[in-house]
Amino acid sequence: MLDSAQKIVCPTLVLESEGDPVGGGGRILFDALGSTVTVYLDPPASSGLAGHCGGLGQQVWERLVFDWLDTVLTPTRTAADR
Image 1: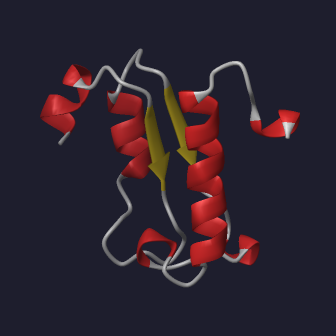
Image 2 (image 1 turned 90 degrees about the vertical axis):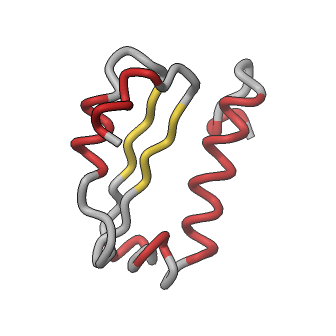
């Protein structure tokens, strides 16, 4: 994906989970995205999020993703506004 990362122009969330056997390149992808509106999250396993796609902490993963979507789809609101 790195060779295509510059073509991504929409808001992008890169979320890595500690202990993900498939992931590990999130920071590299985030850096390659360039000037697009992006957020990189790498919460520690102590947050309850671990494994592939946060599989060991789905409620934590969902809260992070849906809170981010709220800020993207409703730009005048932030997670702090709730």
